[in-house]
Image (tube, rainbow, N blue to C red; front, side, top):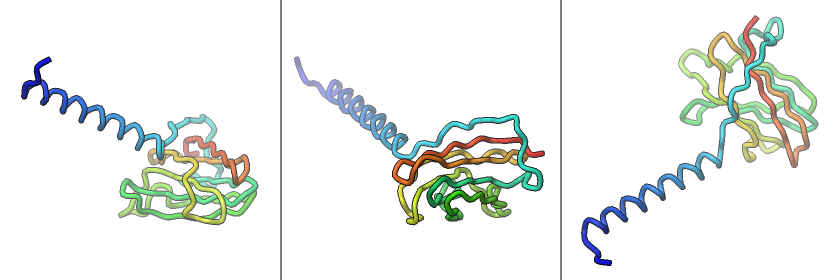
Length: 144
């Protein structure tokens, strides 16, 4: 087989495309955002535009972040429910994703991510499992 500039160029382009595709797949797997799950059950009365987060038997860290990774975070004690009035932003800042970690270290590894719902809808997330094997389930609910 003869190596010409054209064949070498095509091989380089193909190898580069494969490397980009593999890198994108690895990055996506590193911090995936779960698909939105829509529920017909309305939000809790009095909390129409707030996020609802319920911890399991461990401290649940909730991070409401924008596309730049900037935002707010709060730690919720075991078996406690917290409501967030910032799930739709504060006027100049708007979160796009809610990320969760488990344990007393608020900067621990992210165990679950969920998209922030559109205005007029709320998010209801419940943690279960253990601190070593946490599970978080979220649903998007319509405002009352």
